[in-house]
Image (cartoon, rainbow, N blue to C red; front, top):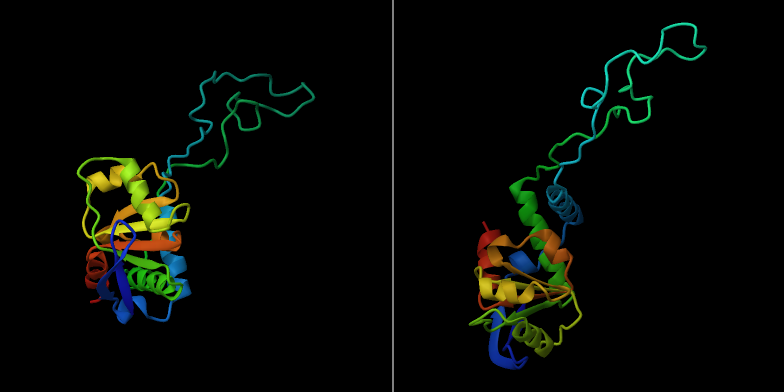
Amino acid sequence: MELAVYTTDGKKTSKKVTLDDAVFGIEPNDHAIYLDVKRYNAAQRQGTHKSKERAEIAGSTRKIKRQKGTGTARAGSIKSPVMRGGGTVFGPRPHKYELKVNKKVKRLARMSALSYKAKAEGIMVLEDLKMAAVKTQDFVKVIGNLNLTGQKTLVVLPSADNNVYLSSRNVPKCNVTSAAMLNTYEIMNSTNIVFVSNAHEVVQQTLIK
């Protein structure tokens, strides 16, 4: 699959790049995508939820009323779950939500997601994107030149660039990542993917084994 290369001014250059069909032209596997997105979402959960059980409630341990003769059920502790302000029974405890997905499945999921974007013509290649300083206005201008304003856009850099990342973090519907950190969720959650320079080659080298 051949794609034209654009400048930051939004103009098409005479250069063209070829996307490897082994990554961008496979038959997508929906189940692999589902598993990898599920794994990603689970990993975002902190798992710090906690409720106090009866042993952790502050309160007196004395018997609150006599055992017999009250006409009501017996009661021994104010910390009992049946009492107002008492402990919680089987409440949430801190734990990890991480799910294991095999490397080959994760790789297949990313290739499937990229293939979907390629079929939908949602991939662009940008000649270069360098910023001497952190300036959101400059980044917004580039996105506007590419006619991607207001669309969910994922910009993939060949390597981490702090200036570009900081310039983009306040731009709605726009995310920046490096080719090494590209994941299935971000691909599927975007309408357009913009590969900067040789970022697509780095992705291909990572996924083709």
